Image (cartoon, rainbow, N blue to C red; front, side):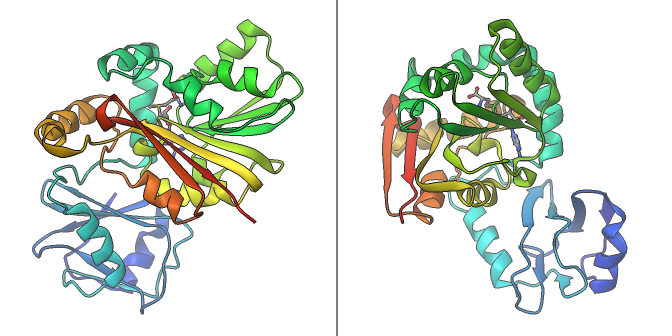
Length: 306
Ligand SMILES: C[S@@+](CC[C@H](N)C(=O)[O-])C[C@H]1O[C@@H](n2cnc3c(N)ncnc32)[C@H](O)[C@@H]1O
């Protein structure tokens, strides 16, 4: 992590590329929001989060450095968009979701207790089965689960694709994945390939019939980019399904919101104010959404049209 002054230049950005993977700039936030401008170009790979008076900017490796300028004025339309999305009345949680490295460490610690959280967060009974039916899988199909964790969805995916099908599972957390691996060994499944990586860097070895985000979208800092990346690997006619929790509509949601944020930060790091369904709608018109538990959970299905 490199701390740079509130006003800095391309030189400071370039100088900071010594980091591997993601580079974190921490800019003292004297103004309403720190901004990054890159000569009006789409820089890609920019995420922001506000943490105790600082604006943290994570640049991905593929960001073209040296073309931009970091300042504390509000000049960058791109960043303003991100900041205003984070400053809706419900957003006291600008630091959620967290960078993958932090997520990885948290889930490595949670892995032995993971099942408990289904109970703590009132995961609706049967929601996994209902989500997987929405993938519209046939025997012999190939499916990718992004953030597959301890493998709680694997039995349903197995039933859906059969032993002739194939399941790819990716996750950043080694210990979560180890539990998936143990499950595969116990059950003797030979058609599951598990990969430990940030989903943004994963390329499936073949075209996918379906993609599942099982309770993982809200945890992903780069959710929309990961969705777009997975979508590009989905065959025409295939389905992507996101099943997750979210802020409940209405007064109940508003009242419970601070408590949910506290619980999330202390446990599974999910951001209940994500835009999963809107993100899916930006890719296809063929989207259906089903809500459960008074809108606290949803299953969103998007089909890739021609
Ligand atoms: C709440 S768990 C869900 C696990 C499982 N899909 C389920 O339904 O029980 C979220 C999982 O997403 C993984 N995850 C979060 N961000 C990720 C990323 N950028 N790339 C890959 N996996 C990620 C976490 O490590 C964690 O195992």
